[in-house]
Length: 197
Image (cartoon, rainbow, N blue to C red; front, top):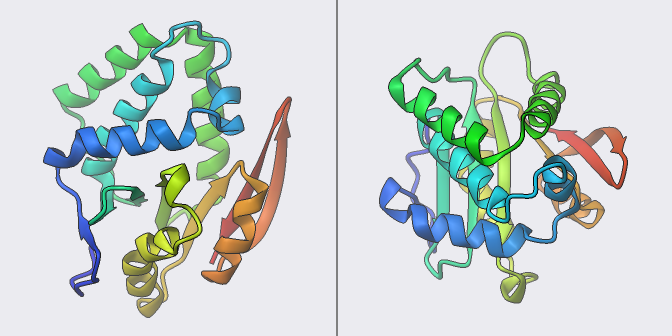
């Protein structure tokens, strides 16, 4: 269920916005420790691009993507909705397998399993899979603005929200939006902070 209230300065993205969404994430996360840890076994120079393509396509089928009017920030949300098995899933998965080593895919599956353990076994929930604001536009309130439609809607329905971040500095922002730090997990050079409302 997506929010039907209109929020100024942001819109629900469509597949036509995919190139913009892709660029914002790549430019925002090219030095992110979490992504580096997930992808370090793969030498393909386009490995982050391949993973982001996969995430965007999956999220259009399982949730919502918001983009701001200035095209400098996005938020990607997924829900408990199951994506129906299709040729799209097969194609998307094969493309990722070709781009990344098997060891990397196994690491991604392991991380996804850990992430999904925080979700309730039944009922609705919403998961902030990615929040990206271009480096030169941070500190201007865009991140908060991009979370508002989903958080306001799901809070009014008494439905929990979940996320994880590998950037310790982001925890204070998420706490201001009503998230609590539930768990911290360390992997080699990266730490992940799991949060929920």
